[in-house]
Image (cartoon, rainbow, N blue to C red; front, top):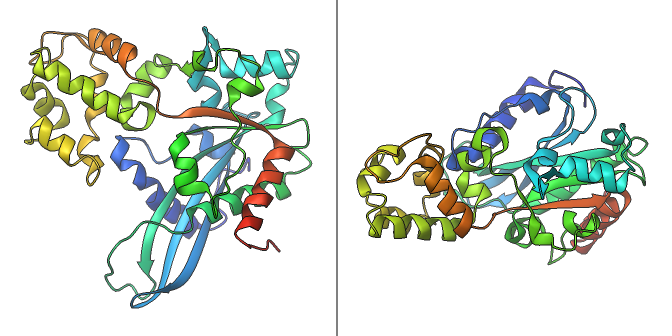
Length: 320
């Protein structure tokens, strides 16, 4: 952490490969300014498979709130009635102390490299099996390494899609304690802690398949096409595809990367080509009809570590 170089250049190459899994969401740069101050981990899992030993990799980074650039992306992404998540944490948990960022660390950029044979021979790609174990091991290691810095008065913050927790981060049905930020901050109307969709020049709209409710978004676009407000030509132009919108929807589960350019449509400034509306009007419609995808979580560091240990224990994993 706070070091601007890799302990091993090969691990840096593997990280770039893992982060290419974000390709389905759009043109997200594999590295950003927060990486230079983060603790970035890569974990490899090896196990017997068809044709030989299989390996898979997983990565997560832990971003300290202090140091340059100050804060973390997660602290800016959400707001409550116009107040950013970072300012809410500062006000409600640290009595407006200016050094509150010293006690906040963000978990982000979890990604993986799909299983493959160590022999290098071609094998049928499958989904990673040990993402949950790797995720918990990474956080356990971080908390052990930096336990003096992130003690009982510290918090772990992050952004996560709720269904992803049980689907990919639970071991034998037990997942780490992703506590609702709204609940921890004492917000009585938790639905009002929402993504700031205007943050960083429509950052949320640049990557809609992660930040927005996917099913609702596709339904809204489909309805606008049926009503003649958007057109198939609009879709073809911005998504750079020859497929109809119906054909794209049919393949959304098997090939979500077909929608990787959707952000180009949703971030248009001015009139949308081959349509009767502007980019601002489209975003207004989406804001009224499409929910956020992920939620903000905020957990006391000691409770987070305890839950990580419980998650690993439920899978009978012993940390040495």
